[in-house]
Amino acid sequence: MQGPIDSHCHLQSLTDDERKEALDAARERGVSGFLVPAIHFADADFLLEFCHQHDDVWCALGNHPHYAEEWQDGDQQRLRSLLSDPKAVAVGECGLDFFYDHSPREQQTRVMREQWELAIELGLPVVVHNRESNNAMLDIVRNPEMADLTGDFHSFAGGLEMARELLDRGFYLGLSGMVTFRKADNVREVLPIAPRERLLVETDTPYLAPVPYRGKPNRPAFVVEILERVAQELGVPREDAIDLTNKNFFRLFAGAANG
Ligand SMILES: [Zn+2]
Image (cartoon, rainbow, N blue to C red; front, side):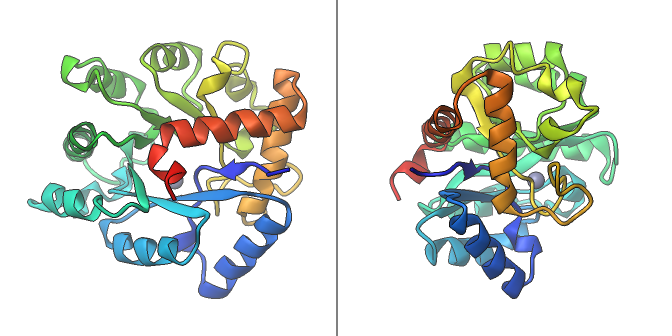
């Protein structure tokens, strides 16, 4: 029986030794796939090489809103050519973060739009980071030009109203270790309203380790605890939750289904 897929783990943030150990430990527990989203544009070369060494690892390429200021003229074109690699199955991690505001908001918005336009052009899904930016995000999501956009709102904690609108528009929600936190009712509350075919599980390694590993560095092996909690909340057997979330992963990140 295959285990769950970690749909969001920043393995590029680990050292070589840690990365090897993390993959071994996860595979040992049956974790059957890993999607590694870029943070910086500069991650791309490393990620593609790394993915080509592992049949069960894929990447998203793009620019995280924290580093929107690094995005330069011509980067959309550079990204377009990098995304021709079959191991790059999504655009991201892109989005908005009005909590940390590490980059100016207009810049974050512009850089996200450029990446979304590219995703639509290439028929790829986006991996979206959204923190304290629901309204600005919805302004863009609702734009008719974005009607064909799909993707994963990862580590979703945007509340019920946001979840409803995103789900109506065909997006997927990524459930992270937060789903196991005692006080995270605001994360678990989306489970009863979300169609099951739109749920993904992820660790967001190296952050947000689930219970009982809270405070430790997070690792893809812990997606098992996240999956188990999701199964429990949905009231389905563990195997069904694995089957469901893995199918969802390959439906959304269709490029990963081809190898
Ligand atoms: Zn991330």
